[in-house]
Image (cartoon, rainbow, N blue to C red; front, side):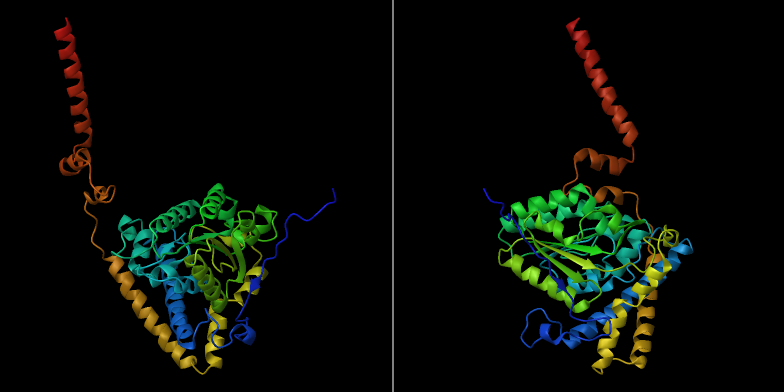
Length: 382
């Protein structure tokens, strides 16, 4: 039998706004779905400034001992903003990792909640009612399984919802990624797998942790739609996620989007990337900062200038300061709060522990009761 080709595929790379702030006219023709308007870009750029300011202040809070380890979002704002804006707040689900602040804020998570969380306060995970965002996930890859389950539930209930879950390049080397992708594609659930390929899994470069040329191609093995995107291009990220969302709503199932980006800061405030990253590489990516190209675009449209930049920066500084002051003066949690969010309906024994603060003695009392009952039974038998 002659040799024949069993499978062929191609992966498209999408860029709409280049590093000089110029749009590709062939991809932005009037009427093209999923193209940002100038007013939307202006709105998202203001959110970028806020998030960058939060990063700077959070870094200082950690260094001054007023907050614990914090992972900066610096350099990856276009990924979170473009994708978050493409999802429908209050309808679709956001299942984050830990570098998606902008998307979380856009979907109703208070900025104070993120600072509380990284300060070690569990109340940072208690979002307002109606906010369709799961808690920050620090374990690598576990949130993809949660997203798949949420999407499956939406499909079974015939709800018009799409789920997007975020993760880094390193997470695609975890078993959870493969299990989630396999289940999601087999059951054709409305889920978007959004990989922020920032080139480094803490101190391990992408090329040292996988032999595949792209991360996007991993989705092909499971039958997902795949797309590689310039992750520092706000327009391209929005377009890719918008298209994936609409495809999922129409029953088209899973899309894996690989966004090529770069973290300009350390992995977290507990890391020193100078030990393993070439500074020339960092500087090369610094020139690709998503904020630079969006600002260049807005300036070319006459929508931005140095005066507006100064005013917006000052506004962001005031806003973030108010949030920080609120967090630093947050009342201490009550001891009984540790019981309040374990179960939808609190079991009687747990309620008794909460109310009595006698966990050990309750256990001893129960044990003593069992021993007493056993002794009584033995006596009767005798």
